[in-house]
Length: 560
Ligand SMILES: Cc1ncc(C[n+]2csc(CCOP(=O)(O)OP(=O)(O)O)c2C)c(N)n1
Ligand SMILES: [Mg+2]
Figure 1 (spheres, rainbow, N blue to C red):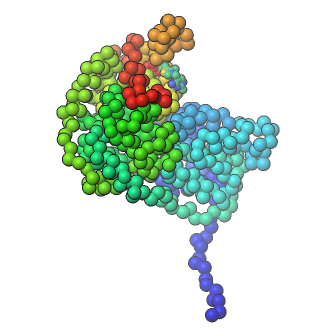
Figure 2: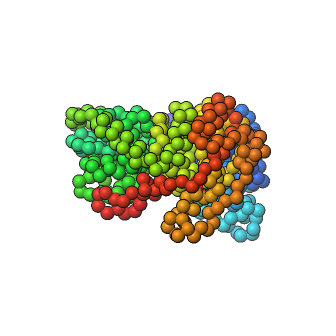
Figure 3: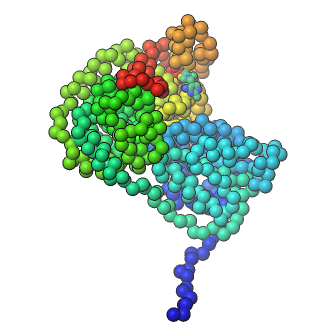
Protein backbone atom coordinates (compact mmCIF):
# COMPACT_ATOMS: atom_id res chain seq x y z
CA UNK A 1 0.00 0.00 0.00
CA UNK A 2 1.37 3.39 -0.84
CA UNK A 3 2.20 5.46 2.16
CA UNK A 4 -0.25 8.27 2.56
CA UNK A 5 0.98 11.39 4.21
CA UNK A 6 -1.09 11.86 7.31
CA UNK A 7 -1.75 15.43 8.25
CA UNK A 8 -0.37 16.10 11.71
CA UNK A 9 -2.93 17.53 14.09
CA UNK A 10 -2.40 21.25 14.13
CA UNK A 11 -0.27 22.24 17.14
CA UNK A 12 -1.60 25.29 18.95
CA UNK A 13 0.48 28.26 17.89
CA UNK A 14 3.50 29.11 20.02
CA UNK A 15 3.38 32.42 21.88
CA UNK A 16 6.06 35.05 22.14
CA UNK A 17 6.92 35.37 25.80
CA UNK A 18 9.82 36.22 28.04
CA UNK A 19 11.45 33.55 30.20
CA UNK A 20 9.97 35.28 33.25
CA UNK A 21 6.47 35.43 31.73
CA UNK A 22 6.55 31.74 30.84
CA UNK A 23 7.73 30.88 34.36
CA UNK A 24 5.01 32.97 35.96
CA UNK A 25 2.30 31.54 33.67
CA UNK A 26 3.42 28.05 34.71
CA UNK A 27 3.31 28.91 38.43
CA UNK A 28 -0.25 30.17 37.97
CA UNK A 29 -1.27 27.12 35.92
CA UNK A 30 -0.09 25.00 38.87
CA UNK A 31 -2.27 26.85 41.34
CA UNK A 32 0.47 28.98 42.87
CA UNK A 33 -1.24 32.30 43.54
CA UNK A 34 1.26 33.95 45.89
CA UNK A 35 5.00 34.50 45.75
CA UNK A 36 6.84 35.54 48.91
CA UNK A 37 9.70 37.64 47.71
CA UNK A 38 12.39 40.23 48.13
CA UNK A 39 13.35 41.95 44.84
CA UNK A 40 16.68 43.02 43.38
CA UNK A 41 18.19 43.84 40.03
CA UNK A 42 18.83 40.19 39.10
CA UNK A 43 15.11 39.48 39.21
CA UNK A 44 13.67 42.74 37.84
CA UNK A 45 12.18 41.05 34.77
CA UNK A 46 10.67 38.34 36.96
CA UNK A 47 9.01 40.94 39.18
CA UNK A 48 7.77 42.75 36.09
CA UNK A 49 6.16 39.49 34.99
CA UNK A 50 4.61 39.17 38.48
CA UNK A 51 3.18 42.64 37.89
CA UNK A 52 1.87 41.56 34.50
CA UNK A 53 -0.01 38.66 36.06
CA UNK A 54 -2.35 41.15 37.75
CA UNK A 55 -4.91 39.64 40.12
CA UNK A 56 -3.81 36.10 39.39
CA UNK A 57 -0.67 36.43 41.49
CA UNK A 58 -0.06 38.14 44.80
CA UNK A 59 3.45 39.23 45.68
CA UNK A 60 4.10 39.45 49.41
CA UNK A 61 7.39 41.24 49.88
CA UNK A 62 9.25 40.76 53.15
CA UNK A 63 12.00 42.61 55.01
CA UNK A 64 14.61 39.88 54.84
CA UNK A 65 14.98 36.86 52.56
CA UNK A 66 14.64 34.45 55.49
CA UNK A 67 11.19 35.93 56.04
CA UNK A 68 10.18 35.22 52.44
CA UNK A 69 11.35 31.61 52.59
CA UNK A 70 9.83 30.95 56.03
CA UNK A 71 6.54 32.45 54.85
CA UNK A 72 6.49 30.09 51.87
CA UNK A 73 7.27 27.24 54.27
CA UNK A 74 4.43 28.22 56.60
CA UNK A 75 2.03 28.51 53.68
CA UNK A 76 3.09 25.07 52.42
CA UNK A 77 2.67 23.46 55.85
CA UNK A 78 -0.71 25.07 56.48
CA UNK A 79 -2.14 24.15 53.07
CA UNK A 80 -0.20 21.06 51.98
CA UNK A 81 0.10 22.75 48.57
CA UNK A 82 3.19 23.95 46.66
CA UNK A 83 4.34 27.49 47.47
CA UNK A 84 7.04 29.74 46.01
CA UNK A 85 9.50 32.38 47.10
CA UNK A 86 11.95 34.48 45.14
CA UNK A 87 15.29 36.02 46.12
CA UNK A 88 18.43 37.44 44.53
CA UNK A 89 21.48 35.17 44.17
CA UNK A 90 24.40 34.90 46.60
CA UNK A 91 23.44 36.73 49.82
CA UNK A 92 19.73 36.50 49.01
CA UNK A 93 19.96 32.75 48.57
CA UNK A 94 22.07 32.30 51.70
CA UNK A 95 19.75 34.54 53.74
CA UNK A 96 16.94 32.15 52.84
CA UNK A 97 19.10 29.09 53.49
CA UNK A 98 17.95 28.07 56.99
CA UNK A 99 14.32 28.11 55.86
CA UNK A 100 15.13 26.07 52.77
CA UNK A 101 17.04 23.59 54.94
CA UNK A 102 14.06 23.36 57.29
CA UNK A 103 11.70 22.86 54.33
CA UNK A 104 13.91 19.97 53.21
CA UNK A 105 13.90 18.42 56.67
CA UNK A 106 10.11 18.79 56.84
CA UNK A 107 9.44 17.50 53.29
CA UNK A 108 7.63 20.76 52.52
CA UNK A 109 6.82 21.68 48.88
CA UNK A 110 8.57 25.05 48.65
CA UNK A 111 9.92 26.36 45.33
CA UNK A 112 12.88 28.76 45.46
CA UNK A 113 13.21 31.08 42.43
CA UNK A 114 16.73 32.44 42.59
CA UNK A 115 18.49 34.99 40.40
CA UNK A 116 21.93 34.52 38.86
CA UNK A 117 24.72 36.70 37.43
CA UNK A 118 24.86 37.09 33.60
CA UNK A 119 24.67 33.70 31.90
CA UNK A 120 27.97 34.03 30.03
CA UNK A 121 29.87 35.00 33.18
CA UNK A 122 28.82 32.19 35.51
CA UNK A 123 31.78 30.27 36.94
CA UNK A 124 34.44 32.74 35.76
CA UNK A 125 35.04 34.38 39.15
CA UNK A 126 34.97 37.99 37.88
CA UNK A 127 33.22 39.21 41.03
CA UNK A 128 29.84 40.16 39.60
CA UNK A 129 27.22 41.64 41.93
CA UNK A 130 25.97 38.89 44.33
CA UNK A 131 28.17 36.27 42.65
CA UNK A 132 28.62 33.09 44.63
CA UNK A 133 30.86 30.22 43.62
CA UNK A 134 28.93 27.30 42.19
CA UNK A 135 25.43 28.46 43.09
CA UNK A 136 24.02 25.54 41.12
CA UNK A 137 26.10 23.13 43.19
CA UNK A 138 25.01 24.77 46.44
CA UNK A 139 21.29 24.57 45.67
CA UNK A 140 21.69 21.02 44.36
CA UNK A 141 22.96 20.04 47.83
CA UNK A 142 20.11 21.80 49.62
CA UNK A 143 17.18 20.28 47.72
CA UNK A 144 16.47 17.13 45.73
CA UNK A 145 15.47 18.88 42.51
CA UNK A 146 17.18 21.94 41.06
CA UNK A 147 17.82 23.37 37.61
CA UNK A 148 18.82 26.51 35.75
CA UNK A 149 16.37 28.03 33.29
CA UNK A 150 18.37 28.95 30.19
CA UNK A 151 15.74 30.56 27.99
CA UNK A 152 12.06 31.20 27.32
CA UNK A 153 11.54 27.97 25.37
CA UNK A 154 12.37 25.75 28.35
CA UNK A 155 11.02 27.86 31.19
CA UNK A 156 7.56 26.26 31.36
CA UNK A 157 8.82 22.67 31.22
CA UNK A 158 11.55 23.24 33.83
CA UNK A 159 9.17 25.08 36.16
CA UNK A 160 6.50 22.38 35.77
CA UNK A 161 9.05 19.65 36.45
CA UNK A 162 10.29 21.43 39.57
CA UNK A 163 6.77 21.83 40.93
CA UNK A 164 5.89 18.22 40.14
CA UNK A 165 9.05 17.02 41.91
CA UNK A 166 7.84 18.73 45.09
CA UNK A 167 4.80 16.51 45.48
CA UNK A 168 5.87 13.30 43.86
CA UNK A 169 7.24 10.55 46.09
CA UNK A 170 8.73 12.12 49.18
CA UNK A 171 7.58 15.73 49.19
CA UNK A 172 10.17 18.47 49.45
CA UNK A 173 11.50 21.78 48.20
CA UNK A 174 12.94 22.50 44.75
CA UNK A 175 15.07 25.35 43.43
CA UNK A 176 15.34 27.09 40.07
CA UNK A 177 17.91 29.70 39.15
CA UNK A 178 17.89 32.02 36.15
CA UNK A 179 20.46 34.53 34.96
CA UNK A 180 19.84 38.29 35.07
CA UNK A 181 19.98 38.53 31.26
CA UNK A 182 17.77 35.46 30.66
CA UNK A 183 14.61 36.36 32.61
CA UNK A 184 13.81 39.12 30.08
CA UNK A 185 14.76 37.22 26.93
CA UNK A 186 11.80 36.71 24.59
CA UNK A 187 11.13 33.77 22.33
CA UNK A 188 8.61 31.19 21.17
CA UNK A 189 6.88 29.43 24.05
CA UNK A 190 4.48 26.53 23.57
CA UNK A 191 1.08 27.08 25.19
CA UNK A 192 1.37 26.50 28.93
CA UNK A 193 0.19 22.98 29.66
CA UNK A 194 -2.05 22.19 32.63
CA UNK A 195 -0.25 20.31 35.40
CA UNK A 196 0.22 16.59 34.95
CA UNK A 197 -0.95 14.53 37.90
CA UNK A 198 1.94 13.22 39.97
CA UNK A 199 3.03 9.62 39.41
CA UNK A 200 1.83 7.38 42.17
CA UNK A 201 3.60 4.10 42.85
CA UNK A 202 1.56 0.91 42.52
CA UNK A 203 0.54 -0.45 45.87
CA UNK A 204 2.31 -3.72 46.66
CA UNK A 205 -0.61 -6.01 47.48
CA UNK A 206 1.55 -8.81 48.88
CA UNK A 207 3.14 -6.39 51.31
CA UNK A 208 -0.28 -5.01 52.28
CA UNK A 209 -1.52 -8.56 52.97
CA UNK A 210 1.58 -9.31 55.06
CA UNK A 211 1.08 -6.11 57.04
CA UNK A 212 -2.63 -6.83 57.53
CA UNK A 213 -1.87 -10.32 58.82
CA UNK A 214 0.80 -9.05 61.21
CA UNK A 215 -1.41 -6.27 62.54
CA UNK A 216 -4.52 -8.44 62.65
CA UNK A 217 -2.75 -11.07 64.78
CA UNK A 218 -1.01 -8.54 67.01
CA UNK A 219 -2.09 -8.09 70.60
CA UNK A 220 -0.78 -4.60 71.28
CA UNK A 221 -0.27 -2.34 68.29
CA UNK A 222 1.25 1.11 68.56
CA UNK A 223 0.80 3.47 65.62
CA UNK A 224 3.44 6.19 65.19
CA UNK A 225 2.38 9.13 63.01
CA UNK A 226 4.78 11.62 61.41
CA UNK A 227 4.39 14.52 59.00
CA UNK A 228 3.69 12.07 56.18
CA UNK A 229 0.46 11.05 57.93
CA UNK A 230 -1.04 14.55 57.94
CA UNK A 231 -3.22 13.84 54.92
CA UNK A 232 -4.34 10.43 56.18
CA UNK A 233 -6.20 11.45 59.31
CA UNK A 234 -9.49 9.58 58.62
CA UNK A 235 -7.59 6.40 57.75
CA UNK A 236 -5.34 6.57 60.83
CA UNK A 237 -8.37 7.26 63.02
CA UNK A 238 -10.21 4.23 61.65
CA UNK A 239 -7.15 2.00 62.03
CA UNK A 240 -6.70 3.16 65.61
CA UNK A 241 -10.29 2.11 66.35
CA UNK A 242 -10.07 -1.22 64.50
CA UNK A 243 -6.83 -2.18 66.20
CA UNK A 244 -7.52 -0.45 69.52
CA UNK A 245 -4.11 1.06 68.85
CA UNK A 246 -2.86 4.30 70.42
CA UNK A 247 -1.34 6.81 68.00
CA UNK A 248 1.90 8.47 69.10
CA UNK A 249 3.07 11.75 67.60
CA UNK A 250 5.61 14.29 68.75
CA UNK A 251 6.24 17.27 66.49
CA UNK A 252 5.10 16.56 62.95
CA UNK A 253 2.30 14.04 63.42
CA UNK A 254 0.24 15.91 66.02
CA UNK A 255 -3.44 16.33 65.11
CA UNK A 256 -3.55 13.31 62.79
CA UNK A 257 -5.57 11.61 65.54
CA UNK A 258 -7.75 14.16 67.36
CA UNK A 259 -6.04 14.97 70.66
CA UNK A 260 -9.35 14.72 72.49
CA UNK A 261 -9.24 10.92 72.13
CA UNK A 262 -7.37 9.19 74.96
CA UNK A 263 -5.67 7.12 72.22
CA UNK A 264 -3.76 10.19 71.06
CA UNK A 265 -0.41 10.11 72.87
CA UNK A 266 2.99 11.83 72.92
CA UNK A 267 6.41 10.34 73.83
CA UNK A 268 6.05 10.19 77.64
CA UNK A 269 3.15 7.71 77.25
CA UNK A 270 4.40 6.46 73.88
CA UNK A 271 7.59 5.06 75.40
CA UNK A 272 5.63 2.83 77.80
CA UNK A 273 3.48 1.65 74.89
CA UNK A 274 6.60 1.09 72.79
CA UNK A 275 7.93 -1.19 75.52
CA UNK A 276 4.71 -3.25 75.57
CA UNK A 277 3.92 -3.32 71.83
CA UNK A 278 4.28 -6.42 69.68
CA UNK A 279 3.76 -4.51 66.42
CA UNK A 280 4.50 -0.88 65.58
CA UNK A 281 2.86 0.67 62.53
CA UNK A 282 4.95 3.71 61.58
CA UNK A 283 3.32 6.09 59.08
CA UNK A 284 5.23 8.89 57.35
CA UNK A 285 7.82 9.19 60.09
CA UNK A 286 11.57 8.76 60.39
CA UNK A 287 10.70 6.73 63.49
CA UNK A 288 13.34 8.30 65.69
CA UNK A 289 11.66 6.41 68.54
CA UNK A 290 13.11 3.18 67.17
CA UNK A 291 16.65 4.46 67.41
CA UNK A 292 16.08 6.15 70.77
CA UNK A 293 14.20 3.38 72.56
CA UNK A 294 15.54 0.29 70.80
CA UNK A 295 13.98 -2.55 68.84
CA UNK A 296 14.26 -6.15 70.10
CA UNK A 297 13.14 -9.44 68.55
CA UNK A 298 9.72 -9.20 70.13
CA UNK A 299 8.82 -6.07 68.17
CA UNK A 300 7.77 -6.23 64.53
CA UNK A 301 7.81 -2.93 62.66
CA UNK A 302 5.62 -2.05 59.66
CA UNK A 303 6.63 1.11 57.82
CA UNK A 304 4.52 3.22 55.45
CA UNK A 305 6.64 5.80 53.67
CA UNK A 306 6.68 7.79 50.43
CA UNK A 307 10.45 7.38 50.19
CA UNK A 308 11.67 3.84 49.37
CA UNK A 309 15.02 4.57 51.07
CA UNK A 310 13.52 5.62 54.40
CA UNK A 311 12.14 2.43 56.01
CA UNK A 312 15.42 0.49 56.19
CA UNK A 313 17.61 3.49 57.05
CA UNK A 314 18.32 2.33 60.62
CA UNK A 315 17.00 -1.20 60.75
CA UNK A 316 15.06 -3.29 58.29
CA UNK A 317 11.34 -3.37 59.06
CA UNK A 318 9.26 -6.52 58.83
CA UNK A 319 7.13 -4.95 56.10
CA UNK A 320 7.63 -1.72 54.12
CA UNK A 321 4.77 -0.15 52.17
CA UNK A 322 5.91 2.53 49.75
CA UNK A 323 3.73 5.42 48.58
CA UNK A 324 1.29 8.02 49.88
CA UNK A 325 -0.10 7.05 53.25
CA UNK A 326 -3.85 7.54 52.61
CA UNK A 327 -4.36 5.12 49.68
CA UNK A 328 -2.06 2.52 51.24
CA UNK A 329 -3.90 2.69 54.56
CA UNK A 330 -7.25 2.39 52.78
CA UNK A 331 -6.05 -0.82 51.15
CA UNK A 332 -4.70 -2.02 54.48
CA UNK A 333 -8.06 -1.35 56.14
CA UNK A 334 -9.86 -3.42 53.45
CA UNK A 335 -7.50 -6.35 54.01
CA UNK A 336 -7.48 -6.00 57.76
CA UNK A 337 -11.22 -6.59 57.83
CA UNK A 338 -10.42 -10.21 57.06
CA UNK A 339 -7.54 -10.76 59.49
CA UNK A 340 -8.39 -8.58 62.45
CA UNK A 341 -9.09 -10.30 65.75
CA UNK A 342 -11.87 -9.30 68.11
CA UNK A 343 -10.53 -6.69 70.43
CA UNK A 344 -11.46 -5.50 73.87
CA UNK A 345 -11.70 -1.78 74.30
CA UNK A 346 -8.55 -0.13 75.63
CA UNK A 347 -10.35 3.13 76.29
CA UNK A 348 -10.26 2.95 80.09
CA UNK A 349 -6.63 1.88 80.04
CA UNK A 350 -5.75 4.87 77.83
CA UNK A 351 -7.75 7.29 80.00
CA UNK A 352 -5.82 6.01 83.02
CA UNK A 353 -2.48 6.53 81.28
CA UNK A 354 -3.46 10.09 80.30
CA UNK A 355 -4.51 10.92 83.86
CA UNK A 356 -1.26 9.54 85.30
CA UNK A 357 0.81 11.55 82.81
CA UNK A 358 -0.98 14.72 83.81
CA UNK A 359 0.08 14.02 87.43
CA UNK A 360 3.65 13.34 86.39
CA UNK A 361 3.76 16.62 84.48
CA UNK A 362 2.87 18.63 87.62
CA UNK A 363 6.43 19.93 87.89
CA UNK A 364 5.91 21.71 84.58
CA UNK A 365 2.89 23.59 85.99
CA UNK A 366 4.09 27.09 84.98
CA UNK A 367 4.41 26.04 81.33
CA UNK A 368 1.22 23.95 81.46
CA UNK A 369 -0.81 26.92 82.75
CA UNK A 370 0.08 28.87 79.61
CA UNK A 371 -0.36 25.85 77.32
CA UNK A 372 -3.85 25.27 78.73
CA UNK A 373 -4.79 28.94 78.28
CA UNK A 374 -3.64 28.79 74.64
CA UNK A 375 -5.64 25.61 73.97
CA UNK A 376 -8.76 27.12 75.57
CA UNK A 377 -8.65 30.23 73.41
CA UNK A 378 -7.31 28.91 70.11
CA UNK A 379 -10.32 27.84 68.03
CA UNK A 380 -10.59 24.18 67.07
CA UNK A 381 -9.30 24.81 63.55
CA UNK A 382 -6.77 27.45 64.67
CA UNK A 383 -3.16 26.88 63.63
CA UNK A 384 -0.48 26.90 66.31
CA UNK A 385 3.13 27.52 65.26
CA UNK A 386 5.80 26.80 67.83
CA UNK A 387 9.40 27.84 68.28
CA UNK A 388 12.29 26.42 70.23
CA UNK A 389 11.13 27.71 73.63
CA UNK A 390 10.03 26.40 77.05
CA UNK A 391 6.27 26.68 76.50
CA UNK A 392 6.75 25.20 73.03
CA UNK A 393 8.59 22.12 74.37
CA UNK A 394 5.77 21.42 76.82
CA UNK A 395 3.07 21.97 74.18
CA UNK A 396 4.75 19.30 72.05
CA UNK A 397 4.04 16.74 74.74
CA UNK A 398 0.99 18.15 76.51
CA UNK A 399 -1.20 20.32 74.27
CA UNK A 400 -4.02 18.40 72.60
CA UNK A 401 -4.19 19.08 68.85
CA UNK A 402 -7.58 18.60 67.26
CA UNK A 403 -7.03 18.62 63.52
CA UNK A 404 -4.32 17.84 60.97
CA UNK A 405 -2.06 20.70 59.86
CA UNK A 406 -2.91 22.80 62.90
CA UNK A 407 0.30 22.18 64.85
CA UNK A 408 3.43 23.38 63.07
CA UNK A 409 6.78 22.51 64.62
CA UNK A 410 10.11 22.55 62.76
CA UNK A 411 10.98 18.88 62.98
CA UNK A 412 14.52 17.68 63.51
CA UNK A 413 16.14 20.98 62.56
CA UNK A 414 14.55 22.53 65.66
CA UNK A 415 15.46 25.77 64.09
CA UNK A 416 15.33 28.62 66.62
CA UNK A 417 13.60 31.69 65.23
CA UNK A 418 11.65 29.95 62.49
CA UNK A 419 8.31 30.61 64.18
CA UNK A 420 7.10 34.15 63.65
CA UNK A 421 7.71 34.37 59.87
CA UNK A 422 6.51 30.79 59.31
CA UNK A 423 3.29 31.61 61.15
CA UNK A 424 2.94 34.76 59.07
CA UNK A 425 3.04 32.62 55.92
CA UNK A 426 0.46 30.21 57.37
CA UNK A 427 -1.81 33.16 58.18
CA UNK A 428 -1.32 34.67 54.72
CA UNK A 429 -2.26 31.39 53.02
CA UNK A 430 -5.20 30.71 55.37
CA UNK A 431 -6.64 34.21 55.89
CA UNK A 432 -9.88 32.97 57.47
CA UNK A 433 -8.23 30.69 60.02
CA UNK A 434 -6.81 32.08 63.26
CA UNK A 435 -3.05 31.52 63.45
CA UNK A 436 -0.99 31.82 66.64
CA UNK A 437 2.78 32.08 66.80
CA UNK A 438 4.58 31.47 70.09
CA UNK A 439 8.25 32.35 70.65
CA UNK A 440 10.75 33.03 73.35
CA UNK A 441 12.46 36.41 73.50
CA UNK A 442 15.49 34.80 71.86
CA UNK A 443 13.66 33.24 68.92
CA UNK A 444 11.26 36.10 68.32
CA UNK A 445 13.92 38.65 67.38
CA UNK A 446 15.14 36.39 64.56
CA UNK A 447 12.23 37.44 62.33
CA UNK A 448 10.36 40.06 64.38
CA UNK A 449 11.24 42.58 61.65
CA UNK A 450 8.46 40.86 59.67
CA UNK A 451 5.95 42.67 61.88
CA UNK A 452 6.41 45.29 59.14
CA UNK A 453 5.26 42.69 56.59
CA UNK A 454 2.23 41.84 58.74
CA UNK A 455 1.26 45.51 58.72
CA UNK A 456 2.07 46.18 55.05
CA UNK A 457 0.13 43.14 53.83
CA UNK A 458 -2.58 43.23 56.53
CA UNK A 459 -1.86 39.77 57.88
CA UNK A 460 -3.70 39.49 61.22
CA UNK A 461 -1.25 37.12 62.90
CA UNK A 462 -1.35 36.87 66.69
CA UNK A 463 2.05 36.34 68.29
CA UNK A 464 3.07 35.62 71.87
CA UNK A 465 6.59 36.24 73.10
CA UNK A 466 7.52 34.60 76.40
CA UNK A 467 10.16 36.90 77.80
CA UNK A 468 12.60 35.52 80.37
CA UNK A 469 15.43 37.84 79.35
CA UNK A 470 17.52 34.89 78.24
CA UNK A 471 18.23 32.08 75.88
CA UNK A 472 16.51 30.25 78.72
CA UNK A 473 17.15 26.74 77.53
CA UNK A 474 20.86 27.41 77.11
CA UNK A 475 21.07 29.21 80.44
CA UNK A 476 19.42 26.33 82.32
CA UNK A 477 21.86 23.83 80.81
CA UNK A 478 24.76 26.05 81.90
CA UNK A 479 23.30 26.21 85.41
CA UNK A 480 22.54 22.52 85.75
CA UNK A 481 25.40 20.89 83.89
CA UNK A 482 28.22 23.45 83.89
CA UNK A 483 28.23 24.66 87.52
CA UNK A 484 26.39 27.91 86.73
CA UNK A 485 29.18 29.13 84.45
CA UNK A 486 26.83 31.40 82.50
CA UNK A 487 28.00 32.58 79.12
CA UNK A 488 26.26 34.17 76.12
CA UNK A 489 22.81 33.35 77.42
CA UNK A 490 21.47 36.62 78.91
CA UNK A 491 19.59 38.98 76.60
CA UNK A 492 18.91 42.71 76.38
CA UNK A 493 15.41 43.14 75.01
CA UNK A 494 13.24 45.92 73.68
CA UNK A 495 9.96 46.77 75.38
CA UNK A 496 7.97 44.30 73.27
CA UNK A 497 4.65 46.14 73.65
CA UNK A 498 6.15 49.42 72.48
CA UNK A 499 8.10 47.56 69.80
CA UNK A 500 4.89 46.08 68.33
CA UNK A 501 3.12 49.43 68.56
CA UNK A 502 5.96 51.17 66.78
CA UNK A 503 5.19 49.03 63.71
CA UNK A 504 1.48 49.84 63.98
CA UNK A 505 0.53 46.47 65.48
CA UNK A 506 -1.47 45.96 68.66
CA UNK A 507 0.82 45.34 71.64
CA UNK A 508 -0.36 43.84 74.92
CA UNK A 509 1.18 42.44 78.06
CA UNK A 510 -0.14 39.44 80.00
CA UNK A 511 1.38 38.43 83.33
CA UNK A 512 -0.27 35.08 83.94
CA UNK A 513 -2.36 32.43 82.14
CA UNK A 514 -5.64 34.23 82.93
CA UNK A 515 -4.39 37.50 81.46
CA UNK A 516 -3.00 35.62 78.47
CA UNK A 517 -6.39 33.99 77.91
CA UNK A 518 -8.12 37.37 78.01
CA UNK A 519 -5.56 38.90 75.61
CA UNK A 520 -5.95 36.02 73.17
CA UNK A 521 -9.75 36.24 73.28
CA UNK A 522 -9.54 39.91 72.39
CA UNK A 523 -6.98 39.31 69.63
CA UNK A 524 -8.94 36.51 67.93
CA UNK A 525 -12.15 38.53 68.15
CA UNK A 526 -10.63 41.52 66.38
CA UNK A 527 -8.22 40.27 63.73
CA UNK A 528 -5.23 42.57 63.37
CA UNK A 529 -1.50 41.98 63.75
CA UNK A 530 -1.06 41.57 67.50
CA UNK A 531 1.87 40.85 69.78
CA UNK A 532 1.38 39.74 73.38
CA UNK A 533 4.38 39.84 75.68
CA UNK A 534 4.34 37.47 78.63
CA UNK A 535 7.11 38.15 81.16
CA UNK A 536 8.19 34.84 82.71
CA UNK A 537 10.83 33.55 85.11
CA UNK A 538 13.14 30.54 84.80
CA UNK A 539 11.34 27.25 84.19
CA UNK A 540 11.84 23.60 85.09
CA UNK A 541 13.45 21.42 82.47
CA UNK A 542 11.04 19.38 80.31
CA UNK A 543 13.80 17.16 78.90
CA UNK A 544 13.25 14.16 81.17
CA UNK A 545 9.90 13.70 79.40
CA UNK A 546 11.47 13.90 75.94
CA UNK A 547 14.99 12.46 76.09
CA UNK A 548 14.12 9.13 77.65
CA UNK A 549 16.46 6.12 77.86
CA UNK A 550 15.94 2.96 75.76
CA UNK A 551 13.43 0.31 76.80
CA UNK A 552 14.00 -2.45 74.25
CA UNK A 553 17.64 -3.19 73.69
CA UNK A 554 20.34 -0.62 73.03
CA UNK A 555 19.51 2.74 71.55
CA UNK A 556 21.45 4.04 68.61
CA UNK A 557 20.89 7.67 69.56
CA UNK A 558 18.66 10.01 71.53
CA UNK A 559 15.26 11.14 70.36
CA UNK A 560 16.19 14.58 69.04
C1 LIG B 1 19.20 28.15 64.59
C2 LIG B 1 19.42 27.78 66.02
N1 LIG B 1 20.40 28.40 66.72
C3 LIG B 1 20.62 28.05 68.01
C4 LIG B 1 19.87 27.09 68.61
C5 LIG B 1 20.19 26.67 70.05
N2 LIG B 1 19.13 27.06 70.98
C6 LIG B 1 18.15 26.19 71.35
S1 LIG B 1 17.08 26.86 72.44
C7 LIG B 1 17.93 28.32 72.46
C8 LIG B 1 17.46 29.45 73.33
C9 LIG B 1 16.06 29.89 73.04
O1 LIG B 1 15.80 31.09 73.72
P1 LIG B 1 14.36 31.69 73.73
O2 LIG B 1 13.83 31.78 72.36
O3 LIG B 1 14.35 32.94 74.51
O4 LIG B 1 13.52 30.56 74.46
P2 LIG B 1 13.61 30.14 76.02
O5 LIG B 1 14.45 28.91 76.10
O6 LIG B 1 14.18 31.29 76.77
O7 LIG B 1 12.18 29.85 76.39
C10 LIG B 1 19.04 28.27 71.61
C11 LIG B 1 19.99 29.39 71.41
C12 LIG B 1 18.85 26.47 67.83
N3 LIG B 1 18.05 25.51 68.30
N4 LIG B 1 18.65 26.85 66.54
MG1 LIG C 1 13.99 33.33 76.50
